[in-house]
Structure formats: structure tokens, C-alpha cells
Length: 464
Image (cartoon, rainbow, N blue to C red; front, side, top):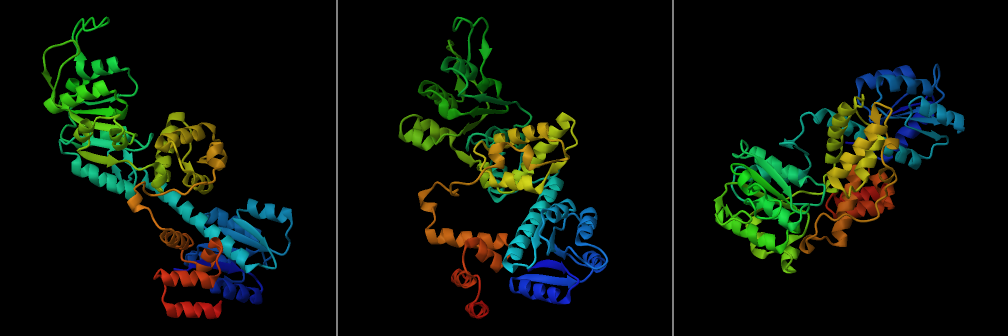
């Protein structure tokens, strides 16, 4: 549907001019000549953005901004004036205006300004929705998210949770692989048993083997007492082998035998001890490459990779970023005894633009820092780390690393054009301006993509 604009000006000729010009640019424009009339219209209908002249009969556009800021802060207001002074610009912003443009009105500039204002409102509405949703989000145990990649993860976890199959959880560092392992345990029939996790990269080989398999008294210098290993200790529950790809070849052999026989031999012992623990392994390494280059045993790889769950990076999870950020805001605000309730739309835009190489762990650190620094009820751009505030994308993020699934230039172009069109809420004039195309070229491409009919293309070219 076209974006709905209310234009306020006490000059009938200007009202008609703007209505016609914006109408040609795919806006649905309603017009009125006074503040009182405008306030009545706002009560009766929904508007995406309002444009007001600063000099109106009876009152000023700045006074209208103040009244809208107090009663309907969700609707952005753009102020138009013939006096392009800095004082007037500052006054408009202080009165709550989204932006400020001068007469004579450049309709292309006005269209872009309205497009940005509508985008900001959509983002503000999304932040508000996520703030309300964070207390009852789509979740699998404690994992927060409702993006399509996470919905697929949740579906797979739900199907495999009650299975006894060994699960391999893969994903970049900081994506929450251990959280996935814990969620599997909590949703399984073994939830009443222990959940035990061990980081295979954090311990030397001898200590790791002692931790996994246990040891008998006197097995080594400091073994004054016998110790039960984690495989046995996790019986009836789940053992998470985090960073299994860092395990040495010798330990890999011993683990493989234990998994095959479902028994362990403690270090220094000669008796086999049975265990009944479900194994969930996790890694940020490419184990298939490690197998091919003989860094990881092929037979162990197939033993732990019965079911594979890949946790997507945060940058591929869209608005989950804001949903998770809101959950962290509430957690750290309560811990710090600060009355922080959310995040401004401008700061949310920065979070969405950043690529989060450290994933959820980095986002958690970012929000904790922002809570510590903020002096307001909402986190602002200034509360964010400099690398998040100043980030500009320098690379194209691909949705897959599988060569068979990579896209052609034409397909990338098609998807990008349609993505911009959706972002601009279907406004083809704004879409063409963002893409650096004229309207005729854009319409030809949309026809080629099957988005519009050829007869509409001809009409568009006649109108320019």
C-alpha cells in the first residue's frame, strides 16, 4: 500500500502542488490548511509521516511539532520553511521534528526525506514490538529468536531432542553452541539427569583424558584419590564436548573407543566402567576439512556427526539482533539497578548495520557496556562502542559457503533490486533513486523480474 502522508499548508496552491507531485511518486497524500484540522485528521486516520509549513495562520508548524511530539511521538514530522536559518533548523529539531527542508521545495529531496522518515518509523515500531515480545519470544528453551534461520534450527532441535543420537553442533565462535547443547538436554527425556560440559581446547591432553575417563589412585603423581570421569558422571544425562576439533589424535582414539563400546577405562586402570550419557559435540572448526587433512579422525567424525545442527551467525539472523539486545538490556539494567527500558531507533539501526564478528557474545558485551555508560532510559548511539557506531560495510555477506549454492550476478542484482523495493515500501521513485537508476530502467527490470505487467511499463514510460 502507498505510504500515507499528511501535508499542512495554509496556501491552497502549495497544497495542490505537493499533493500532485508526491502522488506521482507513489505517496498517498492528504492535505489540510490548519493545525486544528491536522490534529483532527490524525485522530481519524493513520499517517506514516506528516509535512508541515512552519508559518501557518493562527499557530506555527513548530507548535504543531511540539503537540505531536507530546501526543503522537510515533509519527515523524518534517518541517518546511522559506527561512533556511540555522536557528530555525535547531528550533524545528528541538520541537520534535524529524527533519527540516527549505522552500522552494525540491520534490526529489522531499521524497527521499519522507522515505527515510518512514523507514525510521518502521524501525521504531519494530523496536517497540520486540520490546513487548522479548518477554514471550519464539524460543527453544533459553535460545531467543524468530528469524527463518533460527526457526529451522528450532525445528531440527525439536525433532532430535528426544532421540539418543549423538549431535554435532557447528557454528562460529560466540553463536551459542553450548546453549544449543543445553537446550537439547532440557527438552530431552534425560532432562532430569546431569548436564556436563567440558571445553576440550582449555585443558592439556593428560588432564583432559583424566577429566573425561577418570583415573585410579596412583595413576600419576598427584592422583592421591581415584576420580570418576565425566563420561560416567554424566550418565543419565548429557555430556557436551565443546571444541572437540581441538582434541589431540591420541585422545580422539580413546574417545572413539569409549563411544563405540559405551565403556571407559580410567587412566591407570584395567577395568572397564560402563556409562550412559548422551553425547553432544560442538566445534567452530570445519571438521570435514580437518578430516581430509588428517587432523581429525574420520571414524570419530562420523561417530559424533549423526545429526548436525548448524547455528547461524548473528549477522544472518536479521531482527533477532534487536530481540536479543532487548533481552540483554533487561538483564543488565536489572543487575545494575538502572531504569533502562530499551534502545532508540537510531541505535537499533546501528546494531542492525554492524556485522558482529563476535556474534551473540560480542552483542552481550556491547549491551553490558552501553548499560554501564548510559544516562538515559534508552540506549543511544553514543552509548555504543565506536566500532559499532562508525561501522560501514566493506564486504558482501554471502548466505552460503557451498559453491553449488552461490548466485549469479543477474540473480544477485534481482534480489537486491527487490530488497530495496521492499525496504522503500514499494515506492518505485525512491527505489530508483537509491539504486541510481531512472524510473524507466527500474520499470524495465521489474518487468523482466515478473513484478509488473508490460502494459504498466508502457504507461510508466509515457509518464516518465
